[in-house]
Length: 75
Image 1 (cartoon, one colour):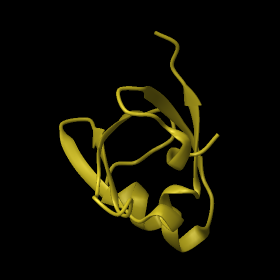
Image 2: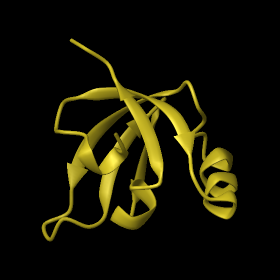
Image 3: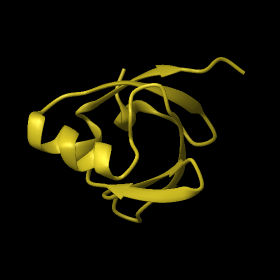
Image 4: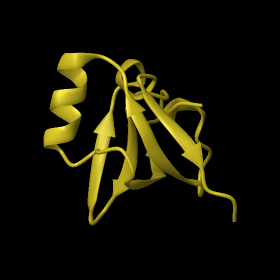
């Protein structure tokens, strides 16, 4: 499962980021494996999407979000 499949209100744990350059960029922003992430907002046309990560909000394009593998947290 990847970040583009996360539904509003769902939380997940980041398991892996695919792509070396993208992984480095996202790691620098705090998007590390093991961190909890939640879907916050979706832009009117569906791209980009915003996520809550730690105490920050991070916006990603759909193509970049598709490279982040997650494990859903069951409520």
